[in-house]
Image (cartoon, rainbow, N blue to C red; front, side, top):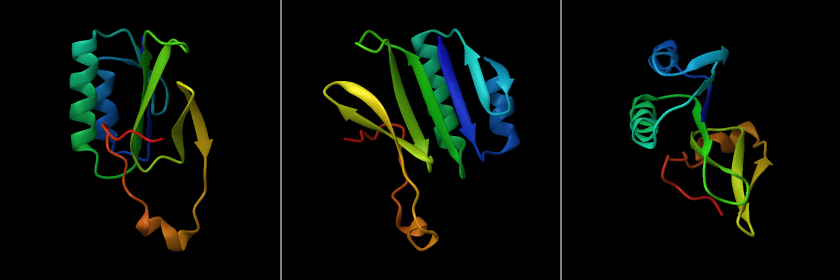
Length: 110
């Protein structure tokens, strides 16, 4: 199973994902995809997004049973601690938002 959550993205990106997944709420998609299809969708999605952010959560063989990947300018980020992925919520002042490094789909946060 895979879940995609899109924030502040063009309507066309949501339309693209709706071909493969069910949009259960605006910007939230759920589906059962093979690894190959999931990775291809993620690559296409990340390369097409100019604004907003995307989160991918998928089944994995680890302690939690899932893995989280983020791309863009998310309002939260993943922190790994002792092999567990935890969510960190942070808010930056407007003056610092331009200096924030854009997360890429292959960046590892620690």
